[in-house]
Image (cartoon, rainbow, N blue to C red; front, side, top):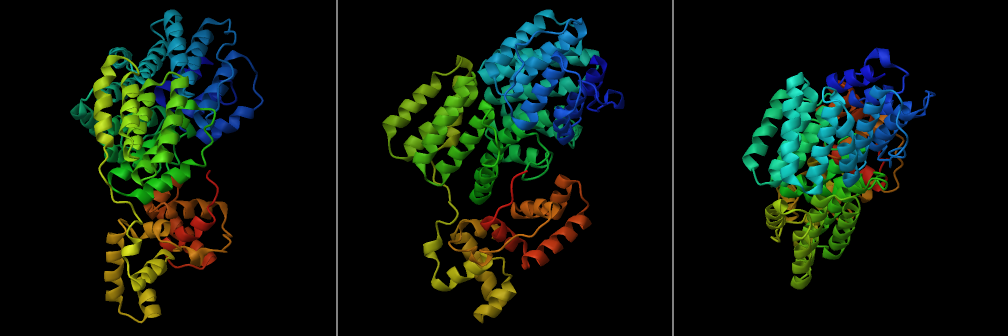
Length: 509
């Protein structure tokens, strides 16, 4: 039993010999076969501490469920007891129970033999929990020791994650050059995340880039490795953390409509049992609200994010939430409330996070950003009509024929509309033009499940190649699906697909 788990941990491959056993869902999780792992949760396998620990971990990772068996009795067999001790610590960390995961990891380290991979993994859990607790210096020392120990055994997978933890800590200690260097080396060493461990390394790298003031680079790192803009290849708990990065990345390039789309997508995630994932999504909502000028909503979400993180000891996320609350209060014109929120943020966690907190506050800033849609009133009546037609997905030639003007005139109008409304892409008009989607109202979407999956990704602005990568399809297959969607919806452009789905969005899967 433990051999199957060890093989999957160190190779990222689920060994055929483990099919049907208690640790099989764990092997599937590590092999990034998440849907299969979830399907195995209800499989008729013998119960017991190992099976319960595995179910808890898969449920926490893939379904963001709260664990149920962290305090159950241990197996009598020594090897199985070591495995279960590690799995419980890992589950607590995966479930966002930061302080609890550190406690369980310390208990596991004390009894697991040092030559077992579960000893290394328990120390790795502790390094991660220390980072989120805000004990950055301790976390870095532990992560570096784990990386060295893992490499001495030839265990590349744990070493990679340990390096990513060190990078995450380096970001919060202000070493931007180290973060950028490691992210570039990760892309070269692991061009595509093929296992759960590699995906976690990419996620930590993206979080590190965001914390280092490089949110756009963090978003690009995730976008290229985890299934594209909708992040469909990530397990649910990780997808919630990733949305926070993607929203920051979109805001960093003034793509506010894209940030709003990520927040809308996240509204379909059921992470109510996962305090840290829930905190991350509330922070993303608060960040977007700050940028669009809704300081009241921003303050509410920031406070909620901080409370959720504080409940489980997530000091770093408490600081981020309180700093964002300070920015929201400052934007609302209440400098006293802003100063109080910033003071509370500075009191969270050990002293080695104070400098990072100050940089984070400065990075959030109060500078005005262009908000898509705010320039609508600057358009004359003719250009407002062009904008509405473009938002319905009509092409320039069709607009020109309807309005009896030249195609060149429409091209100039569309360019000026995008500039005045601070939009970066034509498809953004679907979200920000008042009444721009009226041509789609009343439409029913008679799409197959696969066509719905493709259409959702088209609406997010993904290319056919990106859609193919995220769904495991060839580009030609995607092209056929897009053509079928055009026919079924009675539209002729990708923007029109986005307009139709805005009125009747498909369910998030």
